[in-house]
Length: 452
Image (cartoon, rainbow, N blue to C red; front, side, top):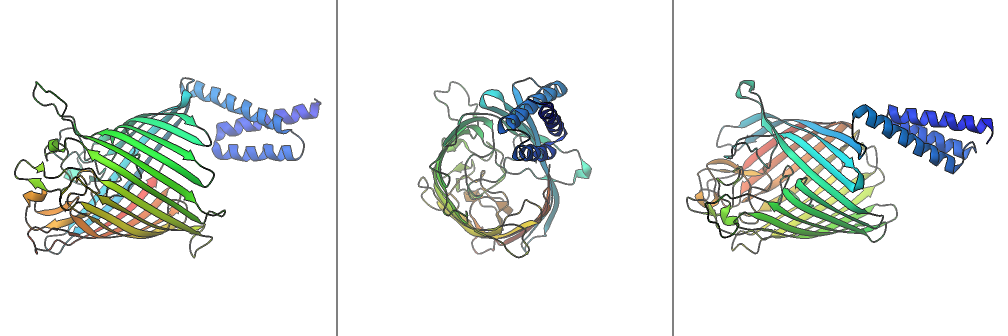
């Protein structure tokens, strides 16, 4: 090896290590420099590979020394977001309710050797709901007021994940703890803020570059019942679920894409799910008299499908433009009446990146006993002129099941970190209380979301 080659390698190695320490963006530019040196014949492919490996090792050692992290922690990522919201509910029968609200989330994910991952996230939330020390499980909104009283933070995620299989064809992982919802489902099933607690497994098989099969399963604790002894058997309510999915790309230019799935969900010992047993935030399920016993069980079958067509360009949109049509359907054979739900809609565009946007429309209907009221969307509700014990509702605005209506959304991202959103809900109760009293509700949410 001549002196010039040695000098070139030393220079390339130094600039690459400096780039890694400086940041990801600069490291990417130095990768491009190494590729250029290879193309010019200054370095061989193997020499460039060795330099990258040396730089990675040097960066890891420097990072571990600086951070104090043990050597089995391969990376630590911080993440979070802040959302400010104006939320207005109006129905023409009672005074409008206008609230200024925020949501704050902050977390960290540590990647470990041997295919492990540990993460947590803290989030804002409303402590009301009847259970001391526990916040609303289906909303992280905190309303401004109470003379600027100090607001609470709660544990939103706390999990460990093991992914021992991750080849180009197969992947399989197991997650335990309080986690992101592993199932693909719209808000007629799960509120987007719901983070279930238990164990989940996710498997994926790639048939080829365009078609993949996924299988998702889980067992989750709904409540822990500490009944009086002697207890002959556990009466704790659990949710068990399994979902199969098929994802496809149908052409070489990836213009046509689709996803479809079928899932089975069941909640055991639902007789333990009284209003006072879990945070009582939603309503709608049929109940029996004063104790609030659920009248029907829950064992729904859920099917869903979505098709996306991507245009090469679209006016006022900076990149390829996706158009998605999606729908889902719930049928709960464990119920005798009011046991179905569905939604269907279209979305144009996709926000989240600089100067991107989307607009969308959905119609949704969730009958009273289609699914457990305390898990479904907390933003879709109706007005009840009088309390109705048979549906567990108090007079006034109530979200949950027994609701149908229209949702219109628009979002715009002027920057990668910032998205503005506008959502309008036009909703009615399926069964009014009393019948013919009028249940229409309009709701407007105006959001500004910063990601970090």
